Image (tube, rainbow, N blue to C red; front, side, top):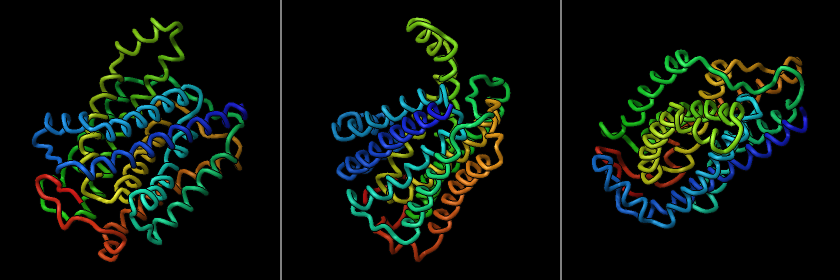
Length: 314
């Protein structure tokens, strides 16, 4: 069990690294593109697919998602998602080194907090009561997912409907896409059960294609991706990505653990360590959201003056 947990944490770290390096690559590519206008979705998609640099980042993101599906087949949500959330630290470092976005004091402490979260999580690995769940009640899944998608779309698209400063727009984009990606993660968790319940490539492929979770995953991911590209092009990655990642992580940990009937460790010490890791991830979201609402935070890096209708380039 302990060896399995450590293997799961390693694979989840690989997923987080691949996914977030892909985001940084996409951000670099978007900086060279004309402004994206979501009122012309086919043109946006054509522009993205025609750019080799953006496609390279997208391929890395897909690799990260594939690793996430695999690790969720043998590790519980409460182990996997805090590790995936640790990608926030990597994004903040890369946004400074690659994108030349200055890492302010708040971002630095977020990096430190997420590193501590991963250490706490690794220490909590193993023990009884931490198995991965693979079955979910479809009615409860729909009751949780549908309102979450609606709220995510309303919040994520709000900077497109009204004039907003790019800093507050980045938080709205982050929370909205975080909820959409969180629902997509629930669908990934549902698909992971097919890998356990079916044997043979043909049966696995047939099970995935016939599962509604595949289409929930595709729809939520597509909507979140389009909003996320606009957000990356117009706002600092060091704000948008952490807010989105941590919002999605906290949502997925809470909803996923409950929906899939997973249990936290029975050992009080390990339970305390794991809950501390989860709380730390939540505090990162609160801290970054408060920073984005503080005018002083604008000094951390250059941003466009406003977001209105569609978002312009940096």
